[in-house]
Image (cartoon, rainbow, N blue to C red; front, side):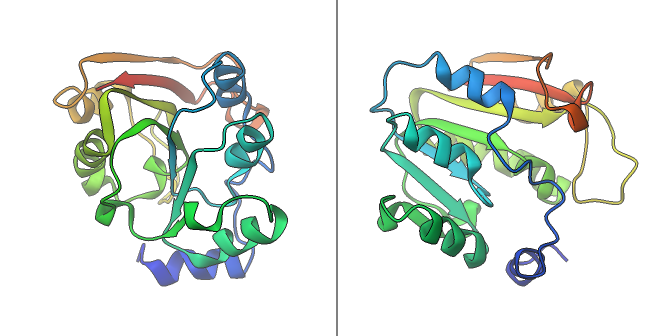
Length: 192
């Protein structure tokens, strides 16, 4: 069900209920405290890439966006004509071979993939990061009543996926989530 065509159709039909319409507060506040603008960033499953738009305006220029669906990448390119087109990648995250990223930003991608792929996600994220690189962002911190996507989970479950690949794991309840997600998110900062 969660194929490239599935996601392309969701964007074409404007069925993107997960889209916050702007960078979410936890990610914004995290990057507002990052001075090193030369970091090489990856946003997998970027969707409409509100995070990238904000960070690009703040001086981060080495941002790579990856989505399986072409539609959100085309929309982003049209809305942000100065953003480097070669940094917009239409591909399956699990097939990426770019590597050597300083930071991977997680924002509603992990919850959109088949839960059977979560361990693969942790392994792939680690393989795309430099030694010392960081996976940062948000995960749902509870089971969801939906059939999915999105798919929820628990901190204990997530630790089983990430512990083999990351040496420093911070995963805490998020206190500054956007209103629709209050009480349901974990902020993560995982260092390879």
